[in-house]
Amino acid sequence: MLQDIPTQSFHGGSTVVLETKRLTLRQPTLADVKDIAAIVSDKRVSINLRRVPHPYSLDDAVAFVTTFANVGRRSSFLVERDRTPIGMASLDWESGNDAPELGYCFGVDHWGKGFATETARALIDYAFEEFTIDCIHSGARVLNPASRHVLEKCGFQWTGVELHRFLALGSSTPVDRFKLERGVWSSLKSWSNATRRGA
Ligand SMILES: CC(C)(COP(=O)(O)OP(=O)(O)OC[C@H]1O[C@@H](n2cnc3c(N)ncnc32)[C@H](O)[C@@H]1OP(=O)(O)O)[C@@H](O)C(=O)NCCC(=O)NCCS
Image (cartoon, rainbow, N blue to C red; front, side):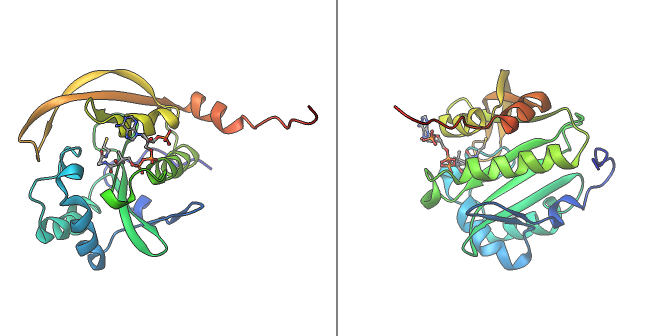
């Protein structure tokens, strides 16, 4: 049965473990802070994330795990491949809309292997299958075609451009905004490939 949208505080989501073909998504703990800092401290990652400072220290990772990741209406996941942390992903319900915001980032060594798409699809399925939401929001800097591509591969549709402040940049920058409607998600999920035979 679908759960209501989380209201005041949301601790349940991140205790969920999601398994995909190649990846495990689980709650980050203090044992992960070194790996988190290694991923996020790379400027190629931090300049694309709104609330991440640069430089990004071990203390920032500790603060993330002990407060941000587990407090309020957020569910944050560490993404592992073969028990090695390779990225982070989240559903954030704090924006005030009745729909979560999807976010993700991966260590540079792991880019270009389809991990962000695989992760995003797992979180999208989780959000629509568990909660009474009509849509999921997301965004990508206009200068971030890889993230835009991930969202489009997942069925997100462009809704416009907004200016957002990025901590690591120390300034505001244009962000393409996207939305995935439940109806579009259901259609994509129900479509199966036709079998072809003969010449
Ligand atoms: C954006 C990010 C998550 C993508 O991760 P990833 O695992 O490489 O993504 P995927 O491999 O699933 O898909 C990326 C797609 O973008 C495409 N792509 C990569 N660079 C591109 C570029 N410069 N222009 C157009 N497409 C590009 C890839 O070819 C791939 O598409 P394909 O599967 O059709 O070939 C990763 O680069 C990252 O962590 N960046 C820093 C943080 C960030 O931007 N987070 C998102 C915030 S909105």
